[in-house]
Image (cartoon, rainbow, N blue to C red; front, side, top):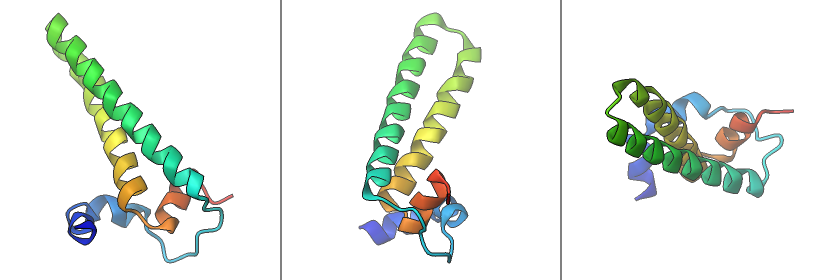
Length: 92
């Protein structure tokens, strides 16, 4: 299942994967990335609810941005390699 999901999300993972070894990878970075992604998805759903209640189409921009950021974080945190997670947090 994980391999088929990696095939579906390969455009996102391709950007963050690198042949370099993960210099500062910690398991807590992956957990934090998943939590951050979940929070952004919940924030996008809350924003969507507010947009529907107010009937303001301009409010769709934050919904799209928050959902995309949350999706990328969840995909890299859940399916990405150690190098991808390390690249999100930076190789310092």
